[in-house]
Amino acid sequence: MKIIIATDNKGKIKEFKEILAPLNFEVISKKEAGVFDEIEETGTSFIENAKLKANFVFSKTKEITLADDSGLEVFSLNNRPGIFSARYSQEENSPATDEKNNVKLLKELENKTDRKARYVCALCFINKKGEIFDIVETVEGEIAKKPIGTNGFGYDPLFLYNGKSFGETRSEIKNKISHRGKAIEKLIKNIKNWV
Image 1 (cartoon, rainbow, N blue to C red):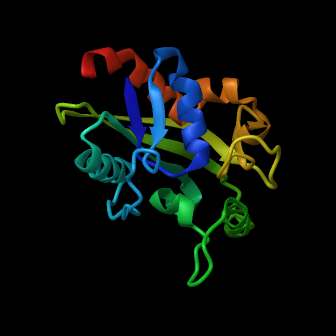
Image 2 (image 1 turned 90 degrees about the vertical axis):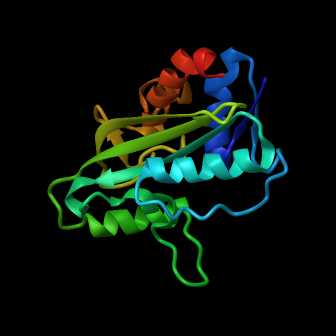
Protein backbone atom coordinates (compact mmCIF):
# COMPACT_ATOMS: atom_id res chain seq x y z
CA MET A 1 0.00 0.00 0.00
CA LYS A 2 1.31 3.42 -0.96
CA ILE A 3 1.47 6.35 1.45
CA ILE A 4 2.55 9.81 0.29
CA ILE A 5 4.39 11.98 2.79
CA ALA A 6 3.46 15.58 2.02
CA THR A 7 6.99 16.94 2.35
CA ASP A 8 10.27 17.42 0.48
CA ASN A 9 12.27 17.40 3.75
CA LYS A 10 14.76 14.53 3.36
CA GLY A 11 15.22 14.16 7.13
CA LYS A 12 11.49 13.75 7.70
CA ILE A 13 11.09 11.30 4.79
CA LYS A 14 13.96 9.17 6.15
CA GLU A 15 12.36 9.09 9.63
CA PHE A 16 8.94 8.18 8.24
CA LYS A 17 10.43 5.38 6.11
CA GLU A 18 12.24 3.93 9.14
CA ILE A 19 9.26 4.15 11.47
CA LEU A 20 6.62 2.94 8.97
CA ALA A 21 8.80 0.09 7.58
CA PRO A 22 7.16 -2.63 9.74
CA LEU A 23 3.73 -1.82 8.23
CA ASN A 24 4.90 -2.62 4.67
CA PHE A 25 3.76 0.73 3.30
CA GLU A 26 5.55 2.03 0.25
CA VAL A 27 6.53 5.47 1.62
CA ILE A 28 7.14 8.12 -1.02
CA SER A 29 7.66 11.89 -1.01
CA LYS A 30 5.25 14.30 -2.68
CA LYS A 31 7.79 14.88 -5.48
CA GLU A 32 7.99 11.12 -6.11
CA ALA A 33 4.18 11.24 -6.36
CA GLY A 34 4.42 13.96 -9.01
CA VAL A 35 3.50 16.93 -6.80
CA PHE A 36 6.15 19.62 -7.28
CA ASP A 37 4.22 22.66 -6.02
CA GLU A 38 5.47 24.53 -2.98
CA ILE A 39 2.70 24.40 -0.37
CA GLU A 40 2.22 27.69 1.44
CA GLU A 41 2.02 27.17 5.19
CA THR A 42 -0.50 29.89 6.05
CA GLY A 43 -1.94 28.22 9.17
CA THR A 44 -1.55 29.67 12.65
CA SER A 45 -0.83 26.32 14.33
CA PHE A 46 1.06 23.11 13.59
CA ILE A 47 -2.17 21.16 13.03
CA GLU A 48 -3.57 23.78 10.61
CA ASN A 49 -0.37 23.61 8.55
CA ALA A 50 -0.36 19.79 8.58
CA LYS A 51 -3.97 19.80 7.30
CA LEU A 52 -3.12 22.35 4.56
CA LYS A 53 -0.27 20.16 3.31
CA ALA A 54 -2.20 16.89 3.49
CA ASN A 55 -5.29 18.33 1.77
CA PHE A 56 -3.19 19.85 -1.02
CA VAL A 57 -1.33 16.62 -1.82
CA PHE A 58 -4.47 14.49 -1.48
CA SER A 59 -6.35 16.81 -3.87
CA LYS A 60 -3.66 16.17 -6.51
CA THR A 61 -3.15 12.42 -6.01
CA LYS A 62 -6.25 10.90 -4.33
CA GLU A 63 -3.77 8.56 -2.59
CA ILE A 64 -3.34 7.94 1.15
CA THR A 65 -1.51 11.04 2.36
CA LEU A 66 0.32 11.85 5.58
CA ALA A 67 1.48 15.35 6.44
CA ASP A 68 3.53 16.46 9.38
CA ASP A 69 4.07 19.94 10.70
CA SER A 70 6.45 20.13 13.56
CA GLY A 71 8.80 22.48 15.26
CA LEU A 72 10.34 23.81 18.40
CA GLU A 73 8.69 26.00 21.04
CA VAL A 74 11.00 27.76 23.50
CA PHE A 75 9.01 29.00 26.47
CA SER A 76 11.14 32.05 27.33
CA LEU A 77 10.86 33.21 23.69
CA ASN A 78 7.03 33.22 23.75
CA ASN A 79 7.06 29.78 22.09
CA ARG A 80 9.20 30.94 19.15
CA PRO A 81 10.34 29.72 16.68
CA GLY A 82 7.09 27.67 16.70
CA ILE A 83 5.45 27.25 13.29
CA PHE A 84 8.35 29.19 11.76
CA SER A 85 10.96 26.67 13.02
CA ALA A 86 12.17 25.62 9.54
CA ARG A 87 12.43 29.19 8.25
CA TYR A 88 13.47 30.91 11.49
CA SER A 89 16.67 32.45 10.11
CA GLN A 90 15.30 33.20 6.63
CA GLU A 91 16.06 36.64 5.26
CA GLU A 92 15.40 38.24 1.91
CA ASN A 93 17.58 36.46 -0.70
CA SER A 94 18.98 34.17 2.01
CA PRO A 95 17.13 30.93 2.79
CA ALA A 96 17.17 29.46 6.28
CA THR A 97 19.41 26.47 7.03
CA ASP A 98 19.53 24.21 10.09
CA GLU A 99 22.88 25.73 11.04
CA LYS A 100 21.67 29.34 10.73
CA ASN A 101 18.49 28.51 12.67
CA ASN A 102 20.57 27.03 15.50
CA VAL A 103 22.90 30.04 15.58
CA LYS A 104 19.93 32.45 15.74
CA LEU A 105 18.27 30.45 18.53
CA LEU A 106 21.44 30.41 20.65
CA LYS A 107 21.85 34.17 20.13
CA GLU A 108 18.26 34.82 21.27
CA LEU A 109 18.82 32.69 24.38
CA GLU A 110 22.17 34.28 25.35
CA ASN A 111 20.76 36.16 28.36
CA LYS A 112 17.96 33.73 29.27
CA THR A 113 18.19 31.42 32.26
CA ASP A 114 15.00 29.54 31.38
CA ARG A 115 15.94 27.27 28.47
CA LYS A 116 12.93 24.94 28.70
CA ALA A 117 11.48 23.96 25.35
CA ARG A 118 9.34 21.39 23.64
CA TYR A 119 9.19 19.82 20.24
CA VAL A 120 5.66 19.58 18.79
CA CYS A 121 4.52 17.23 16.01
CA ALA A 122 1.12 17.45 14.34
CA LEU A 123 0.18 14.68 11.90
CA CYS A 124 -2.70 14.76 9.46
CA PHE A 125 -3.66 11.48 7.77
CA ILE A 126 -6.11 11.30 4.86
CA ASN A 127 -7.34 7.94 3.59
CA LYS A 128 -8.48 7.18 0.04
CA LYS A 129 -12.07 8.08 0.97
CA GLY A 130 -10.88 11.57 1.95
CA GLU A 131 -11.47 11.02 5.69
CA ILE A 132 -9.15 13.13 7.85
CA PHE A 133 -7.54 12.04 11.12
CA ASP A 134 -5.10 14.12 13.18
CA ILE A 135 -2.69 13.64 16.05
CA VAL A 136 -0.61 16.10 18.10
CA GLU A 137 2.28 14.96 20.34
CA THR A 138 5.07 16.76 22.20
CA VAL A 139 8.35 16.00 23.93
CA GLU A 140 9.68 18.29 26.69
CA GLY A 141 13.33 19.22 27.07
CA GLU A 142 15.65 22.20 27.13
CA ILE A 143 18.08 23.99 24.88
CA ALA A 144 21.81 23.32 25.23
CA LYS A 145 24.40 26.14 25.28
CA LYS A 146 26.02 24.76 22.12
CA PRO A 147 25.30 22.08 19.49
CA ILE A 148 26.09 18.52 20.57
CA GLY A 149 26.22 15.61 18.10
CA THR A 150 25.57 15.34 14.37
CA ASN A 151 22.61 12.95 14.22
CA GLY A 152 19.11 14.04 13.25
CA PHE A 153 18.29 17.38 11.68
CA GLY A 154 16.85 20.78 12.56
CA TYR A 155 17.36 21.74 16.21
CA ASP A 156 18.33 18.19 17.28
CA PRO A 157 21.94 19.10 18.26
CA LEU A 158 20.53 21.74 20.66
CA PHE A 159 17.53 19.87 22.07
CA LEU A 160 18.37 18.15 25.36
CA TYR A 161 16.17 15.28 26.54
CA ASN A 162 17.17 13.80 29.91
CA GLY A 163 20.53 15.59 29.62
CA LYS A 164 21.42 14.20 26.19
CA SER A 165 20.90 15.99 22.87
CA PHE A 166 18.84 14.45 20.09
CA GLY A 167 21.95 15.13 17.98
CA GLU A 168 23.88 12.51 19.96
CA THR A 169 20.97 10.06 20.21
CA ARG A 170 20.84 7.09 17.83
CA SER A 171 17.88 7.32 15.45
CA GLU A 172 16.25 4.08 16.64
CA ILE A 173 16.14 5.49 20.19
CA LYS A 174 15.10 8.98 19.12
CA ASN A 175 12.29 7.52 16.98
CA LYS A 176 10.76 6.01 20.15
CA ILE A 177 10.93 9.09 22.41
CA SER A 178 10.62 12.06 20.05
CA HIS A 179 7.49 14.11 19.34
CA ARG A 180 7.32 12.56 15.85
CA GLY A 181 8.03 9.07 17.16
CA LYS A 182 5.17 9.34 19.68
CA ALA A 183 2.77 10.76 17.07
CA ILE A 184 3.66 8.01 14.59
CA GLU A 185 3.28 5.34 17.30
CA LYS A 186 -0.29 6.61 17.80
CA LEU A 187 -0.76 6.61 14.00
CA ILE A 188 0.47 2.99 13.79
CA LYS A 189 -2.01 1.93 16.51
CA ASN A 190 -4.91 3.43 14.55
CA ILE A 191 -3.86 3.19 10.90
CA LYS A 192 -5.58 -0.16 10.19
CA ASN A 193 -8.92 1.36 11.27
CA TRP A 194 -8.31 4.53 9.27
CA VAL A 195 -7.17 3.10 5.91
